[in-house]
Image (cartoon, rainbow, N blue to C red; front, side, top):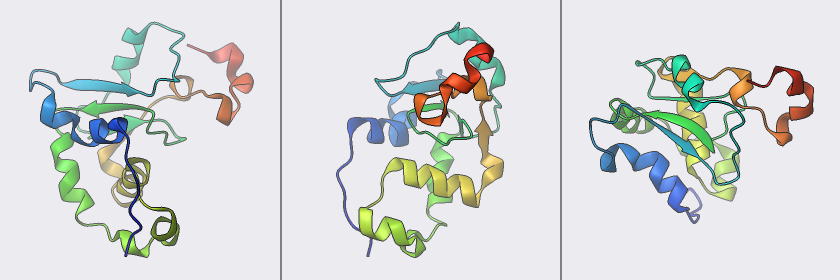
Length: 135
């Protein structure tokens, strides 16, 4: 059995945004409250692939993802195909949306879009290394 854990409002928003956003909204950017944008956000949209259910960086941070609102409902079909009981660390710490999105990415990489490194720079992954290349 998978350990139960608490979920934040952000968790529910990321997983169910397609249920509450109007169908006219094609893509939605989800950002955690500690994210800072240091460039024109309009440049981000040119990296979007309409076939991907969501986009994130190589560091796979659910705190900065673009949700394809018109396709994201399909994620539940993919989630149902994953056996989360085999993930040992999840059984002990519980499961959250980050874990779900990572497992979907691992099992079905063709449905996940990748954002360029300059859009996923964080202090956690060495932002100082990229200081000259920030968008």
